[in-house]
Image (cartoon, rainbow, N blue to C red; front, side):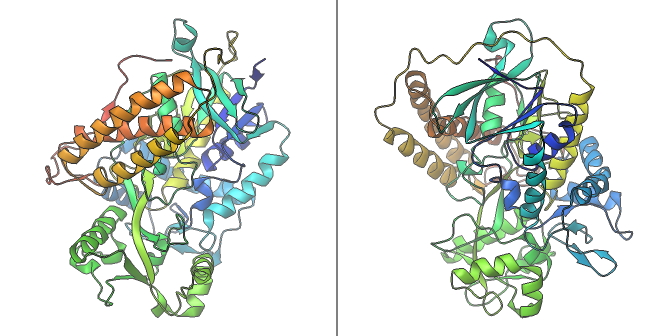
Length: 526
């Protein structure tokens, strides 16, 4: 029998949790979480949330900075919508009890790369974790919210999948990874809040759950996607054999950190007049250039000159983690490398977070609202989660109650258990390695074509595997990753210029007019 709810939310990060809390007073909400509810990219966000909170700052300045970082590909309406709703989003978090760091006369605001003012409110250097812990406590205590932990969504249930005429979503199929059973979860409104796709690359700052699930599911259901070529590589991921995906916050550079070569020479002023305060794409390319020029495994980020008291106050978590690995950042620089960090493109949505399928919404990193353009401005992502989660909740609450068709159970009558799981692990490894080599920070058409050829071969093999064997968590993620990789490459091949995060040796110039790269499925697959 299907499980019935008023709203289904897929993903338990900031977008999913904040939407659930806004809906749950009048709606029965189910949240599908791939792991436990506290595991998400939101919880890993160190820097903070950008919003205009200081009288010396302005809405227009924040919008201007966002456009500058995004290489003017940003959607004007979406950008203004997010920035103008920034203070209300922060006030809502404060009302929920988030303990933002205080300074003289109010909350402490830090500055990050690409920002012309101090406008990043934070909780020391672990903002995402503090926000997530605060909201999770309220979420688990709410009687109208059901959290389905250790479940992974497989596909949406739409008119197309049911053989009906129409364009509506009725819920999703989800695998209970503990029992191996597939559930039918019915809901008149479904919100995609699954995050990004960093795990499509070999090196990433993202958690293991960031496998592009919502983007791939939406594409298969018939949604348009846009700007998938713009993958933000965080310039400073900790380089250490025992450290997995630990990023060194943008705020370290914002508070005076200096990038140096192994001999101590600063190099950012040679690449950009803003030096360490340049946007992330500029800094990532500069590091990539210096590493390739000198054959380096890493470069170094030095904050030691600020003194131990300053460092322990502003970056206690980064200090503690590095110290565990034998690096005392009060005395020595931090070894860093770029790593895939944020998916700027995604599912095309409007200002109410609606996709092109009725009853299906998207918010957070899985969505392409137009805010980020060709490169996300630091600390705009959590703000986007909050603003569009509220927009989705408001639209869902305004919708009339609709009748829904009877939903069929998952059919696995023609499949068997997989005989060789090693196929999945080999394909996963191959995909991530050639995406890193061919679709990385600097690209060529030849490399992109080579990646596309390999992707098509993998897709056929994975689709055959999916058609014949029972689904597992790894198979579902691999299926989604290869679709997401294909979308990234297809968008990259469409862009005949270099703009923002997309740097092409074959098209080094920036076109006079900024245009999004939109992909539409040839048919609605259901």
